[in-house]
Length: 326
Image 1 (cartoon, rainbow, N blue to C red):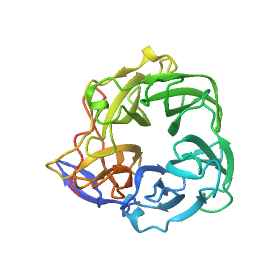
Image 2 (cartoon, helix red, strand yellow; image 1 turned 60 degrees about the vertical axis):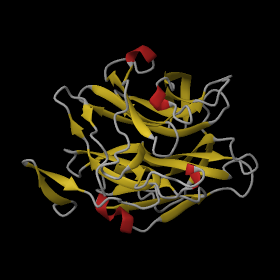
Image 3 (cartoon, rainbow, N blue to C red; image 1 turned 60 degrees about the horizontal axis):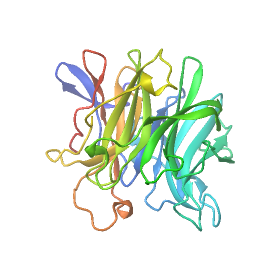
Image 4 (cartoon, rainbow, N blue to C red; image 1 turned 135 degrees about the vertical axis):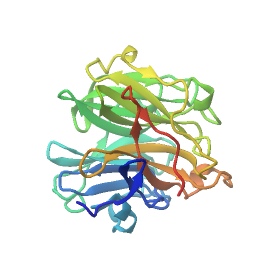
């Protein structure tokens, strides 16, 4: 594994240095370091029409790795538009992809869906459609992720509240009974409250979980998908009842945001991974290297995947710093 990363001396410790951007024109990146030693990568493609997977032994090699198309949108009906935010997880010996999709005839009727593959190598084998992941009510829903803790598996996702008068999106959690279904009611963890969560649009979306130092940290993305995009943070004790909103605390300020000095705009929709030895945490996210966007930011393809070391404060909380320069 010695050649997996390029290393440079930072302070007195060696830290990995990443060739940012790692993968161009790939937004909402998710990276998983599997037991076979590969980093598996998936993300939103600019055409919003397919799901790609790639793998490499090094994060720095993901941009050069072959992109295997494992699924394409339907020509009609459900799963026919806006294929967003795929995430791949290995659960009970099988691979699962959670993704977001609209209808071909109603492109904003956005819901959550699941694919399954029993092949040891997810770039091979057959990806079977398991259908919609039902959350308990029907409304705009996206950005599902999952994590396990203390023998229980949880789903985190984004959705418009039942009977909501606005289009604001909130973050929910629920216990899972299978990798494609939840049991019990959804619990809202956060909704847009602060001004920085409501720039142009009231948005809490794209949760990502990291369990460390006796706590569960959940990042989420806020506001419009332009230079105002940023990360917020929720925290809960790892031994607490994660299905009780009062267990969680919310940062009053964004923890990761645009850095004009470093030329990085709208960082967000992250995932977490580690170095191959598991000793160094890594933040993977997307950002643009310019502020001004012509037209709708959703139509701008240049949200590139980037990575940087995630540092830790003395009290065991994450120090995100700011997005590093390319």
